[in-house]
Figure 1 (cartoon, one colour):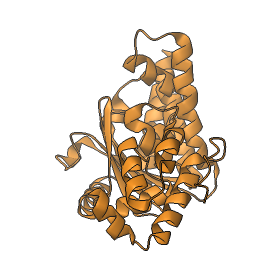
Figure 2 (cartoon, one colour):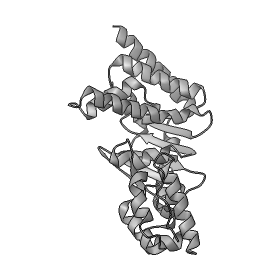
Figure 3 (cartoon, one colour):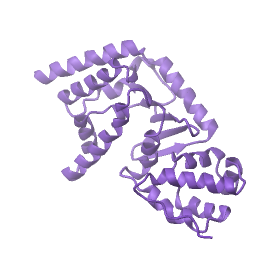
Figure 4 (cartoon, one colour):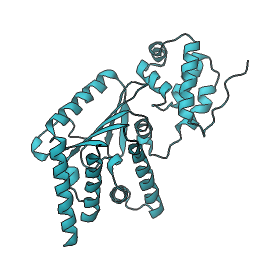
Length: 279
């Protein structure tokens, strides 16, 4: 009997690879938990591979081929499914983000990527890579703004962002850029496309002070949490870990200003930046 054919890289290879994995697992009579046990990963990790929300790494592909008797199918095709235009540490998170039905995010020092304008993103990318060619910076900006197109849908994903006051006070790109960036956030909030809260300085210490947290929920896969630092990031699928960070997000939303007061603050700060730019 001939083995499975190579996946077509032009037709959502990760989703196709996930569908093939589900088919092979069910054919072998294994549950997600049972297959995960043989790979020394959780059953939820297998579920996320099948749903296409996690990237299949070569070492897991080789183990899957061995356990499921699929010759070298997953080994041959996992590289095509892993191709991404995003940095390695963020690629999985960006692709999972595009499939999420709900995203809760805490941003400590930057406006969240999904809420950034082109000018703000350009200032951030230039700060991260001060010696990069202009073409490289523009490519990064295009990719970042392209991510935000998921907000073009009127209902999904639900985005609930808690933004630290420090991110709004840090003048990134100059007053004009900040005025435009804050007006953009206010517009999205006014149109009820996103929920935004500001965590004021006087809220004091909180459990996410050392970095950014992005919690993502899906219709067809277990939730994920993405933890990001300077040039680093990791996805976590362990249910206990996800539950811990969900509690953190709830604490942050409870500690932040209400959406109404946050919108008023953002609009006032946008006006202040615009006035400063005219001086």
